[in-house]
Image 1: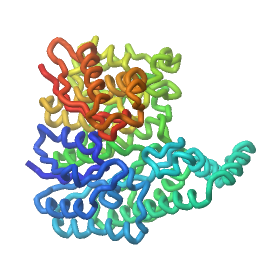
Image 2 (image 1 turned 30 degrees about the vertical axis):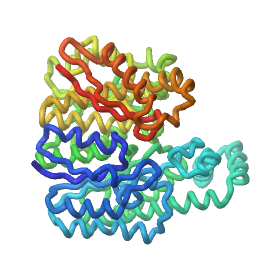
Image 3 (image 1 turned 120 degrees about the vertical axis):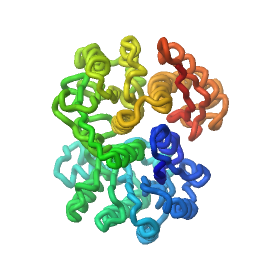
Image 4 (image 1 turned 90 degrees about the vertical axis):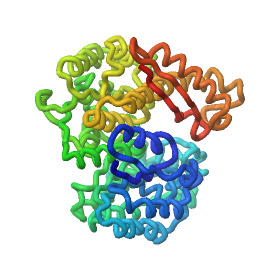
Length: 505
């Protein structure tokens, strides 16, 4: 077994558990820090203890997949809250040089987010003042950026002036000063790449937009990467929670001297040109990066393909999964799900090719109509991967990674369990049960979407019951059924869920 050190972005299951789960059944042993080192939500990790753990395990490892946000700030959310100076942050990140010196053959793949700037007012994952001024902070960056580019309308210029008067200067100063420090850490990551300490770097954008503070930082960082001539080893594209998985796929493919050819098939001819929610570019452009980063290449014909990536996407504007009961012609006449599923069947049963499904028709959950057709065609457990959670990029990275692993190692029990997990989490929970429990049960318990009764309270029990009902009705077939062993709410809210799922059959 080959050892890989993995330092995740945070302690949530999507970051802490998904990648090690995909490694089961392979010849890779993923070493992850004990959860007590990683902090929780706004509480940062014990960074000093975390570095000690990394150094201790580096000697016996062949590779390391490292979240710089975790190693410097203590996690993704602490990266938006910290009080570090640029010098302090650089001193911490500089420890990567010591890591490389401990094991010069250690292959280090790192990822370091560009700090996001949500468009809404909520302090759930941001500084406390974002509850009152989040929208104003976003618009200050968005309209200020457009103004710099001379692209604002008269109405936008008026709004920009009003926001400048309404938004307290000290709040904007605190926010932008932290962004500047984080950008300096981004740049140091590039420096460590060019000097050879880091072997490959991903700079993902979490909840990005075409204008604003994040877009400005992206532009500055892209220019810096160009100055350092680092573009072939420093990828910058939308994403976050999937990157650990993507880098694992890259490491595995490189070790196997394998570069799979991927043929793309969409549910709509216009789907490649959709800009997904929470992202800043055309879907097709993001797909290129996700395939490339995981170690593959897109090809132009089925005849040349090692794998087919089926991409279910809208014809025009993307909706949230909880809006799918009222979808319009964008989702009906604008795409052809019947042909999409028939082609899926052809790829699997006739061409015998690896077949991945990236279900990005909606943000934050599966397309239940598609799942119904997949079940009718008896393809649920013939797929090499399926994903349909959170953002388009979260889904793409997950689906591509599992399919690449399945292509190399086959349909192991671990493969089926992860496939079952995706159906339960993405379809059952994200697309249906989350909203059902939030609206039907939580109000009577004096709870709400942002506040459940702890990780394993009554809310989690109700979620488990509803998930098992859904799974029994929609996620089994003649040979397979899903058993849900555990359900918990990692951050005591309804957005994400922790699951232990087994596929029996």
